[in-house]
Length: 167
Image (cartoon, rainbow, N blue to C red; front, side):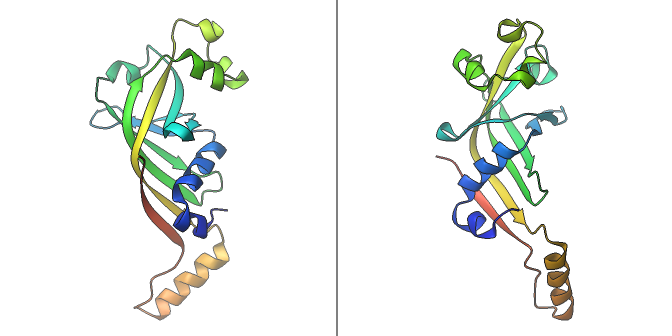
């Protein structure tokens, strides 16, 4: 369950924890006609970068240009956490990162393994985003909605919203 206090006090750390717990999010290219696509994130907290394995012949890779901006959307595994993140998006074939994040699931997608000629990575270098931590309790949600309906000056307290920036 998403912690409201952590969302208020430590939203960036909570974000990295949530990204680490999901299998996939939706990655898109800002300003393009391409629709967002599911991608498995590999989070590098120290550099505020999210890495993605992909192939060089995908529409997303072909559409990237110098200065391209990406957007990654995350829904937490318990559906009580959401994030929308933006930053520069680039193709980076980094063999150290390939080795660091390589696993059996990734290997299943690349016939030639780490030497597959189509294997590459995308690096989303984050600069900002927004997070929402909400209650996963239907009882709390119902209680807050009922209180707000009884008092028109009361807004339901069902979550925390924060804007985050990465240095």
